[in-house]
Image (cartoon, rainbow, N blue to C red; front, side, top):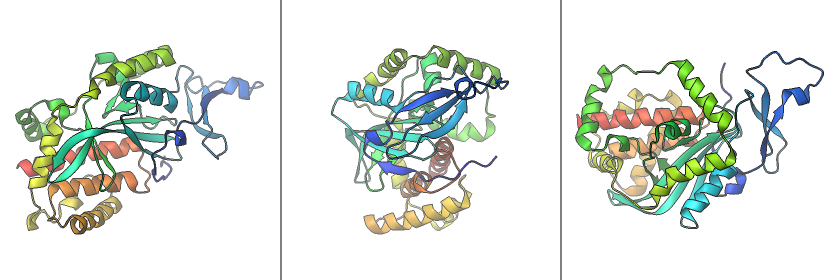
Length: 316
């Protein structure tokens, strides 16, 4: 089934996504009917500002909605007033939330600010993630999130895709071996059971305490491997042999065309030669600003693949 086309909307106001959202049970809505489809028991209904009640999805009985207000309350508790927020959301109920902090790094003369990127959705298409890791996995395994960067010139939120590797040699070795490695997927049953157990026990207090614990360590800046890779990408100028690279990246043709236009625009704005760094940012800009049938989750998956592919080419 083709997913509905949507274009992310940009806002800097929490209130645009912190509207009421609640379950509406099918048994209450249809009291005279026997509900046989036990895997789908509740409608997820939101009330966007200045909008009608919207049904974003239908979920199982043990699914717990995570309202954006829960996330906002934790962010305010962790960072106080020392942050700004940039949000990209769709009318289909998907949200990408960038928490932008004051400190950062310089890449090729550009100042990038440290940030945290969280995703959420009310339609079930984009899982709750922190820096690209699902909340369920992080809560189950005790992982800590990495960091991301915010680039002002194009308002890009750049995920820290290389941070989990620790050191550059480890990442370079992984890039070399990646084509030879088959993805190891866990059994669907165990993944579903983990999610079911987690959601069935999730309460506002439990969720917020877990999220706070994950984010509390992000107050202080620390060197990141991704920032090192950014600097390397910036130093690698595109040559004639790289001219067709955009067409080889794992993104739809129309998005590749938009990325090409964005690349040329930034070259003129910055008075700079085309580089791997500018190409990555051009793709990121196209992915998160274009109308597409891709979900936000799909866009982030493609962004990660593009980052690693460009990194591998730049180190070759």
